[in-house]
Length: 406
Image 1 (tube, rainbow, N blue to C red):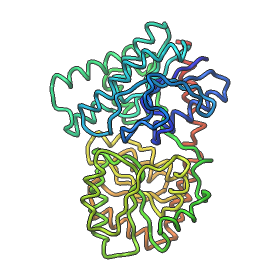
Image 2: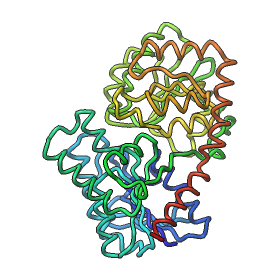
Image 3: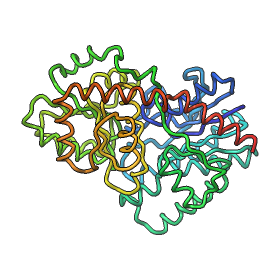
Image 4: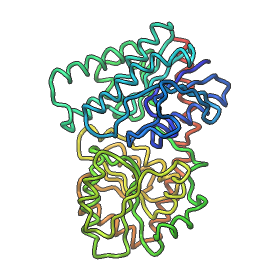
């Protein structure tokens, strides 16, 4: 098959969709398919386009033997609704210009969010007369409404109409959690057009004894500290102020250090909240190559989300990476993520937005190294069987074959 991946997020950017899609592309190439990627100039999440890409309207390159076509984007930081919409819409349009350089595929895969990119996929699907598969990694519109970010009734109605159009015209719609899958069924998406293909993790890349972990602890002056790591987006949905509040409750214990790694709309505010806390430290986004060592250098990983009904169906990819690295989890998410943590016996679960209970879980793991080792080993074993990225990619390949034959 000739496959075109259309996405707003792709390496050299670092993040969950970037990792998942690049690994999917490599798997499909190894399986004998022809794969191309159509993406904007890299800029997420800082809004800064790297020097090597600046001034380009169109850029063609090879990344890990995968041809990538990049087009211009109105690059802004991952904050502020209006500017982010312009960011998304700019690539929605410029991708139409770049598509002929990627070539006509047998099947088109579009990653959402952003939802608008589905319009580009629909237009190309009609022009090329090829099926398109829509992968919904996050319920973007529902999340914006529940978080109070989007309140305009007309905008919400238009967004829902766009969702319905795209889910109706897509040959297949895939999603990454059972909660979202069930939600699509309730919204009337035919079961025959739906597929659940979860996130996963490269267990050969993330592993307990990753090279460089000991040196990294020394470099970051972490020796002698119990390090609780959060690595990911510092946004509205994560509710990271709860982790700051838990750190404040443990501030008198100099052994515990909360390490935040990443960028996002809330980072500056979080740094202000933690100004007086020497047990909280922030680092910028790290290169993908550093992440296995960073996870292996931590003693525990915290995965929080806000206490909203929508997030009961969430399954953050951070869970799988921490488990693959053999790190015990502190899962501060209700629903599907908590259920997986308990089923795998990979960590402790606390209710979201409860700093007292989060602090208690941190203290329990800090004081019980035997429990830490057992939970970490359980998590590693579980993801190796059920969530290894190669197996996940095989499932997605089957969805694409079905779409082409539909």
